[in-house]
Length: 111
Image 1 (tube, one colour):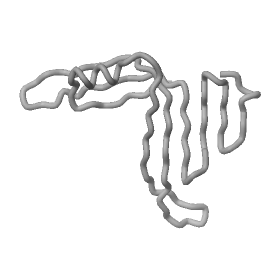
Image 2 (cartoon, one colour; image 1 turned 180 degrees about the horizontal axis):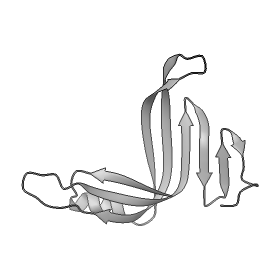
Image 3 (spheres, helix red, strand yellow; image 1 turned 90 degrees about the vertical axis):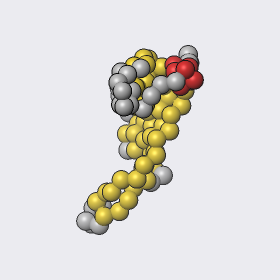
C-alpha cells in the first residue's frame, strides 16, 4: 500500500521532515455525507490512521508565478479506518492483522 501527500512547495526543513528514516504516523480526519438505511442524510465523522515509511519526494517544477506542486510518497504498513467511533477497516502488514467491519479475517488471509 502507498500514500501520497501533496505539498505546495518544499523547503529544506520540509524535505528533511518528510523523508527522515523510520516509520511515522499520519492521521486524517474528515466528515462525509452518508445516507442511512432509512434514507436519512447524516454526517459521518471519519478518521484514518496510517503508519508509513518515506518512499520518495518529488520536488515539483519551478515556474514564475506558479506553485511547485511537490509531493511526498510513503509505503503504508498499517491502515486503520474509524467511522463514527467504530473501526470499519484495519490492515496491519507487520503484525499480520486484517479486520473488516469488526470481524477478524487474519487467520483466513495471510498478508
